[in-house]
Image 1 (cartoon, one colour):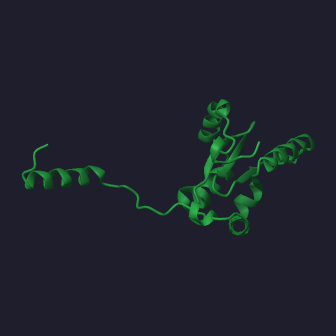
Image 2: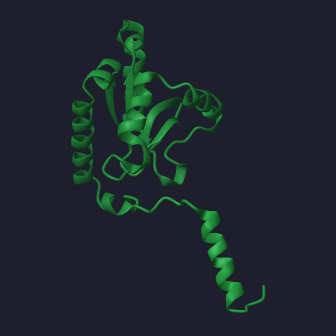
Image 3: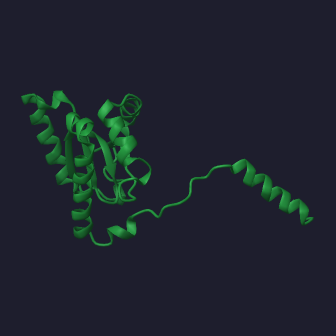
Length: 165
């Protein structure tokens, strides 16, 4: 199965409850990567989703337009059995059209700048290979703050101009 917009990038709704629990209980390295690097379009303006169900797996972080998955691997991923599972998972995700980047917890926590450079480099490579990917990049928008104040201003301007609702 090739992941694209028509199948919501291979989204698997059956894994959603488990993904929600993982989102609420992130590891220290995942939280650090999310807060300082990937949230709110910080990475070159792209939106990443965390703990995203894809195929039969849950990706730590995923960017739809780039079809990029970023994994933060703890010490359990170094064991032989888990390494084989990760290889199978990466193979399945690559077959669906995703690019996978893996970073160890130690890399993220001790050398975040190198991790950022690695992600930026991979994004630049993907931008060169996917036609019109830059048009899929979301445009920045201002955060909506003070909506009650804005609503009051609009109501006041309507009442000042004697318009009845």
